[in-house]
Length: 220
Image (tube, rainbow, N blue to C red; front, side, top):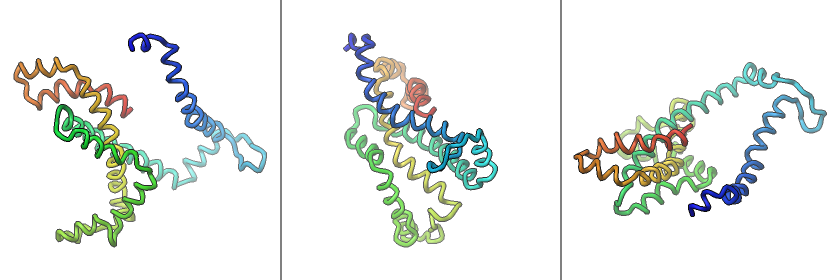
């Protein structure tokens, strides 16, 4: 195994097929989109170079785009703020030798493998104002005044979408953080326990600093 890791040709032979597919499916379309954004072309007529006029029109004449961009950045911000500490907390909670560890890993990761279409349909039923479980639950506990048109009210739609995104992807990040936590040398934890360090300080001074590079890599 150590020889394989030192052999660059072996490493390249494993990486190259996936890299080629990723380049064709992701990298090439991205650069093509950027290239064609400087032209005016409806496929039927002759392509015409327009420079940055498309971008000027996009930011000055298209109010829908500006609102969409603002909401996209807000969604990204709130999912990072909520999802990262939640994923780390879940990873810490199920790290070590706890009972049912495989079960929890499977349950938390399961939403990540569902299709976006299935998730959209599922949560549209959950948020449905007439028969959705959210409004029904609020009504059953006497909080009818809190029922909303969750996906139709501009005051609640962003929070509703953030909940769905965090629910879908928190398990994915949890698995990565869990792997990072379990790769922390056991000698450090044992030495801390011998010195009388409690669980809170161990998390603060050992676990979190050592997984910080993984957090930075995933988030940025």
